[in-house]
Structure formats: structure tokens, C-alpha cells
Length: 158
Length: 158
Figure 1 (cartoon, rainbow over the protein chains, first blue to last red):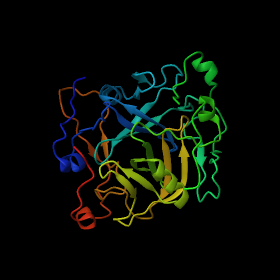
Figure 2: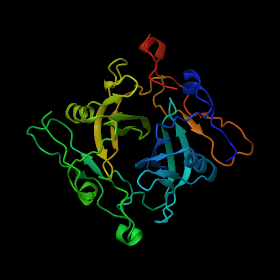
Figure 3: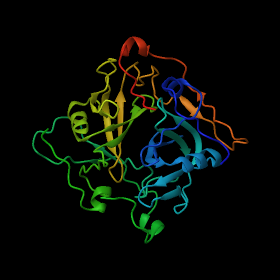
Figure 4: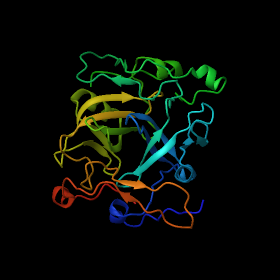
């Protein structure tokens, strides 16, 4: 890795300047939103550490930090659905990243759907002391996670 | 608040079930991606606590948890740019939220731009030990933050 991030020493510079000064949190991570460059849909929400961000910029393929496996994660390594990065943006205070990627006809979600956001939350006043019921917005799995991930433990933590 | 979240006691249920079982992190927060329902563009990345999520569902206006001010934050309270919620989705392991909102011709970024993601990061190999230069993708401010926020401190932290 041959390049550096600029030190965050001035709010105006961070917000309106032209230098990359990402803010990593107390765990050394920055949140990442990944969208499908064709449809604009959000595919997933993940995290990168310093190294994952640098590798993503340099290789133009998405690398994340897996919080469940506690290691750098080249997305698609197991499933084959590598994310080709079309654009990376950073927000005003440089503490979150937006990745626009090409996954062809593939999927991004370990459950098998194209996007991880396949369920919606009903809106409005809830009359009784009830548990909210989600609504499925996508019912088509692109792959069978049992075949693809075999005996690997689920990244989902309770 | 009259409704409850379901306890997370089963991975299959969290991932493929129909009940809302959000996971709040060690600070009691869940990350939120907010997009413009008209253009699909990402407007901002924020956080909600339990109460902000419930208020957003019930009022159909976006509430967040402000980490810099350490309080619930009704987006648009000062600027007037309230976010009318069109849809809320939750991801596979229910630890992040996608909010699709209507902000009319308004703005979402405290710096004055419509979206917080107005700068892109250049891709590819960096030849020398250089600081990366960001590229502005939006140059039009919707409002003047000095006029709107006056003496309020910037939410950006170094």
C-alpha cells in the first residue's frame, strides 16, 4: 500500500476539502453502504478497516472487514459473486463509505437473495402491544446457501 | 410506544422470519442508510436507537440518534427539511436499516448539499506515497449552513 490518508485536523477541511481523511471508529472500522450500480438498490451494509478500504481502492474489488469472522473478507471469495467497484464516495464528515458495484446477475446476500434488504417494516401506529410483522419484498433466491457455503457457520449473530 | 421487538433467539427466524428483531450494538444503536425515494441516491448514513426507530415507524418521519449531541434528533427540526418516510427495510441479520424518504426539493446534508455523499474517491493503483484527492460530484448547495444553523456547533467530529 503506497498511499496515505490525510490526518483529520480541521473540520472545514474534512467536510469541504479534497483530501481523503476517513474516520475509523473505536474498533478501527468505517461503515460501508453497497449499492447495485445498475438498479441503485442497496445490496448490503458492511464495514471496512483501513486495509480493506485501501485494497478496495487499489484492486477495484470490494473488501470488507468481517466482524463475525474477525478478518479481512474479499467479498465473493466463496460464492463467486465478486463485487466490481464502479465508484466509491465518502460522506461529509468522512465517517461512512458508499460503494457502487457491479455484481452482474449475481447475489450479495448470504441468505441467497440479490440484496440483503428483502423485508420491509410496516409503517404507522400500532394499535395493540404487538410484534411487528415484516413483509417480504423479494422471494427469489439467486443461489442455495446450503450448497454454496456448506458447513460454514452463518455470519449472523444473535 | 405500544409495540415490541421480538427477541433474537434463533438465527433462521432472524434471517427468514417475519418478525422485527433489530440488533442494536453495544451503544444501543443500529446503522441507518437513507435514500431519496425519487432518485434512489443515498442521502446520508446515520444511527437510530430503539426509541428513534419506534418513533420513525409510528410517525412516518425520520428520527435518528445524534452521536455528537447525544440525543434523539428529529431530522429537519432546525433546517425544515423533514424526511417523510416512504418505506423502511431491514437486512438479513437485522442489524441495519434502509429508509427511503421524500425530502421534496430539500437537502439532507448539514454542509448544504442535497446528499452527504458529494465527493468520490479515485480508484486504482496509487504510484507514489501520495494523499488521495477527492473529486466533487455535486457543487450546488441547496442552502447556506451558516444562515440555517447559525451558531450551532458542527456535528462533524475530528
